[in-house]
Image (cartoon, rainbow, N blue to C red; front, side, top):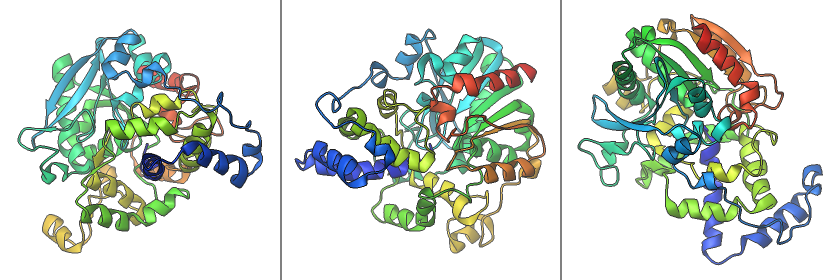
Length: 423
C-alpha cells in the first residue's frame, strides 16, 4: 500500500497518544461517528453498545509468514540473498514445480506477508496450490530484511540510505539470479504490486540484460506514474518536501517499522468492531485508496494490522512521492548540488523505459485513487512490449484489492493463471 499506510498510521499515532494519556477512545469514536459526522452511511450504523465495541483479533493476525504458509498447506523455506552493496534480504519459498518459478514483490511499507494473509484466497497460496514454485521477496529495510554485512539498522543511519533505486540496481537482480541458480531455469515469472513494479521497471531500464530473464511481468497497480493521484493523498505528495525535511531534521531515517507497542496500540483501536472499522477503514483508508467494503471487510482488517506496516526508509518513501510531485519516473532527486555530484546534472536522469523489452501485463482498478487509470495508460503507452492491459471489471476495485481483496480469486486470479499458462 503506497501512501495509504503512511497517512493512516500518522493519524493513528495521534489517537494512540490520546489513548496513552488515559483517554477512553470509545466516547471519542461514538461522538465522532454518531453525532458529528452524520451522512447517509453513518446513519445506517447501530447505536454503539458492548456488543459492537469489542476487540476481535483473528488468529491469522498473530501468525507469522511461516505459520500462515504451514496452516494453509505449504510449509515454507527461508532463503537469504546478499546484494553487491552488503544488504541481506529474506526470500520466502513455497516449493513447487522448479520449471515454473514465480517471484512476487510487494509495495511500499509492506512485506511478503501481504500476498499470503488472505489464506486460501491469497495469491501466494493459490499459486502454490496450482503447483508453481513460489518465491516471495522482501524489500531491504522491511521487518524481514533489516540486515547488512557491516551496518546495524538500529545504530547506523547509513543503513537507511537507500530508495527503490538500490533495490532495483542490487537486490532484485541478486534475487532473480539466486532463484534461477536454485531452480536451474533461465527465466522467472514476475508478479508485482504498487512500488514493487517500480523495482522491476527501474532494474530492466538500468540493466537491460535482465529483460530476457523474465517471462512476463504481471503488473498490479504499478506506482510508476502517480502525478494524477486523487485527493486527499495528493495533499501528501504536495507536502512531501516538508515531510521529508521534518523526518530528516529529527534524524528519523526509518519510517513505520514493525513494533510491538505500535501494533498492540493499533489493535486497541481498529478492531473495535464497527466503530474501529469505520474510523480506520471507511474514514481513512478508503478515502485514500478507494471505497470498497465488498473487498476489505470488517472481519479481515485486524489481520492486516497484524502484518502491516513493515517499515522502510525515509529516502525510499521520498523517492516514490517524487514521481508524483515532479511527474517523472526518475532517479532519486537529492537536490541540485548533490545531483550534480551524483549525476553530473542538476536534475536526476529518467529511467529509460524504451529499453524495457520484457513482456508486461498491466492490471488497473476503476476506483484506484492512488494509481489512477490515466497514469497506468501513460505507462502502457511508454512500454514497448505490453501483452495485456486490463481494467478489472468491478467498478469499485481499488489499490488494495489487488492483494487484500476478498474476491481477488474471482476477479483477478483467473487472468493471472491465464498469463502464466500462456507464457
